[in-house]
Image (cartoon, helix red, strand yellow):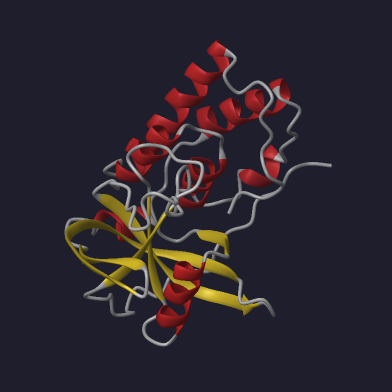
Length: 235
């Protein structure tokens, strides 16, 4: 059965962006404008974050710690542990959510805009907050309609699938817009955390496509994808 792709609905770019943004630091997790990201939120402070976001503008900022971590929860000897995070992240809008009986949340975020952290504020109810700077990312809106030659990228994806037993319906993928294809691959392929960050910070969609292609070629040559499996959807 061929692996398929699912993507977000078009982002409402008239939606006002927040002046203060809660952030959710997760290693290896990438959100890009116009794309969906499913999340399972179980830690108490991040349940608080979701609760507060739902009561206001429904925005959450996804960022990565600069040092990869298996778990960003505070340790027993450092209850206020707050890992250093990269300066650039992506704000997501809570499109769908479900609160489970034990208080956990299942969410779907839709990427709205990249941002740079201007200032970090004091924590609120255990979660971190920042003042975001959304300036300088107007290229994202233009890129949503960009048309790129993706033939080489699709060929590289097929080679990856053939090598690691992940069958793709490449014919179907040719019908996707350039932004959905490139950003979907950037989010879902098993790149390293620092590489995910480089993909997030790529200036334009064309730059991101070149980087995805370079990373695929380097990874295929080194065997570093051995044992990895792509999830059934690229969100």
